[in-house]
Image (cartoon, rainbow, N blue to C red; front, top):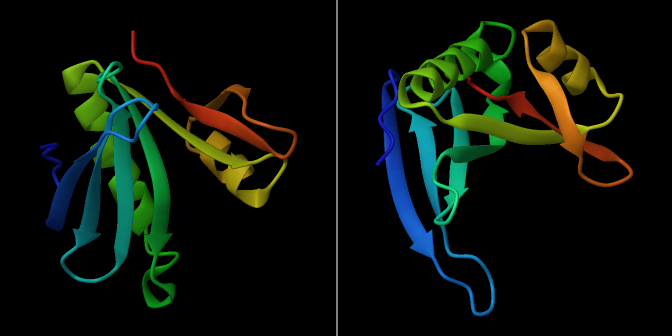
Length: 121
């Protein structure tokens, strides 16, 4: 179970789809209801975390909630020598926002989306 420096409710589940890579995902919901997100990783790549579905409730937006979550995630990844990845729509406001806080593209996903993240050395 991934432990972050956040006040969260969390649930972890592992999946092994037929003919596909086994993976584990963990849902995080901030106790104040401000945000939620999912981290997942493939069992054969446990040092590579993928962030998906980061959602901040409308009434909590523009208050630094997403920055707090990302700070906690990057601290965890640095401490545990894990990579953090996520995909965003190419040339979108969210890509520009992630770039502005230090994340960088690290690969093409498809024609409309790119992988972003940070690789810890």
